[in-house]
Image (cartoon, rainbow, N blue to C red; front, side, top):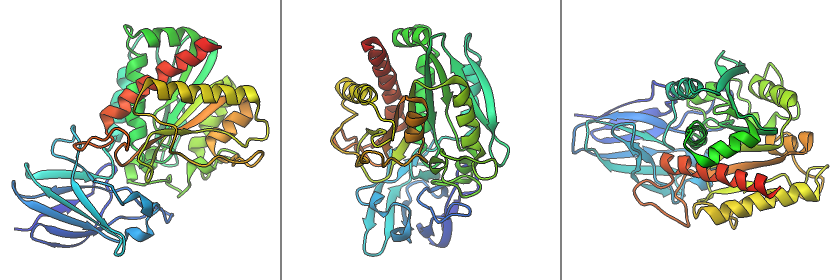
Length: 374
């Protein structure tokens, strides 16, 4: 009896070319109106004990081919715990081969542990029910989904946290869940101190259309939202337009844009070096935050990361640069790996939702240290 494969669900993405017994030849669909592709998420129905061989081809043309060497696919049999399946990448053929022995007759595979739209709404409902926390709809996506913003805190420091501009980077919303759980906990001392000092504006998912459609990097119109911040439009990027408009209303003192990186096996941050109005004080606070976070958690490091822009050469279409330039804020992009963390590997799960959530707590505690520093 042959296995069956489907991706006809929230964030599903796979094309099935052939199935023979427990072996399947597959490929990944491109984002709508775009050439980006890398995210996959599909379900296999099989017999318990089947040894599955799933071959995903065409990956030399994927968005980030360097993301496949050393990568192991995420796998789950209950959609709660996500482990890693043995995976091998043939660079010459551009094929990722996933092998897994099923302990259940239904198994899910994904590029990273998915974060569903339903889970997003559950998170919003749960947090918004806490006293002192509100949710407002900043605007709507091209397909009419709300751009939710959770707001809390009584302080003067305006803090913006936002994620999933690139929808396939689902680790960003796991991070957001960890941050919101911490801030909504009345017994958490760091959270209590932060809420006295700050007003938080938290957008857990800036790209719900791409998330639902199983895109890697773009929205419904095939737009990369993190290249729209200089001139967002209602036609191509209403998600960015409504968030930036809300930022203009509140001002921004500190901002973190949460992402995932396909190729680099580490957690790191990228800053705003190269903006025209860069100041020594901005740079000092950014470097202080980065160094303090590295001292707080061994899951964060400063050796691996992106090259920095030279003076005056920053790309202002990207949110971190635009916000630092527009508001004089301390802004940064947090990147987490799709692979494992090179410095602290976990053979069972690699980088995982659990580690995303724990990292969020460390990031917020580090923000409190930065504020106390003055």
